[in-house]
Image 1 (cartoon, protein in one colour):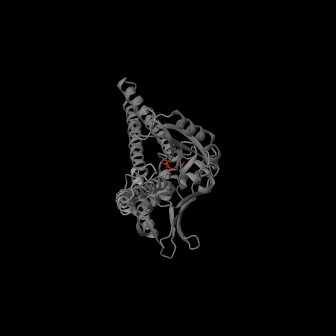
Image 2: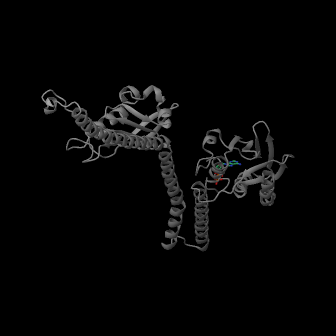
Image 3: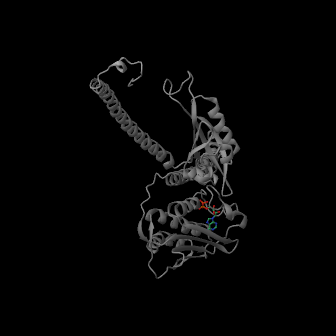
Length: 413
Ligand code: ADP
């Protein structure tokens, strides 16, 4: 500080020339100090500005990370106000960014259980993810979410003033479990159906072998009958296992899908080469009405071949001698689809069974005496057409008149 008070010893000095000299030296030194300080302040300012820019870019990076997450994400602050929410979160709860930013969560989020979890996690001031399962209505459908609520704690020994950590807010993430739950449920169904289906022929084989061991087959003819039953049941078991492996390998994606431009008519002709001799043996006529237009589809040739073979095979094995099977293809230009139909004049399927006809292991009681089967063929056809090729399959049938299976696949543009 420059001190020029009346009490200063300089104030008594008589020489006018001396005054400015002394004052200017003091001033010079003070100005020098000030200039030094100004330079230091400017450097500090620059550093602060740099730090601000680094913090801003880090914040924008983390904001981008959170908003880019495919799962719904919400971040709140220490006042339980909405700080950030990504698009999936907005979509899930029908919110808009402008509508909820900086709003208290109990006003912003229309789900009481979630609000309770957020405020509860923030108020406990302790680390650790809290998990809860939440049902949310999306477009009239109830979906199940696994929610993770993670308090954001201030670093220990860092910026927090007290000895305990402080909760600066909460990160909420939601993970849609609906599909996983459905897959798990269908796997369970599949495993229990498989066990049930395998147990029946096994039990029968066991019973007949025990009767043979106990000497219950007194004569050669009875013994031969028992051997026939055992052999038949063993064959059924082997067919079941083959089909089960087939369908589960396709469904689990173990079989590589090889989509290539193919001509559906050529695949059908290959399947007919196998089926027509079998049909002829059973005195069944096969009529072919393939579309004259050649339309390519993007398909896995082997899978579509298996699907066609299954439909034709069913038509042959369930139809009586003298029946007719008609195989036709058509193109629906407007829908951009090519369709294939396998129609027979066989026994037909009861109306009450039609909704279950594509279910795994379903066999219509009305027809299961006509031919052997596992109830897995049509389930495989449906999976190949719908899940693998994004097509559709339908069935029309009338008892005593016949059945008509049609599948449609998108035409290659
Ligand atoms: P399966 O191995 O029993 O033939 P599928 O899944 O191929 O199994 O067929 C399921 C059931 O649908 C069959 O058990 C049968 O009752 C009925 N079905 C399928 N195709 C026909 C058809 N062309 N005519 C009559 N019934 C059929």
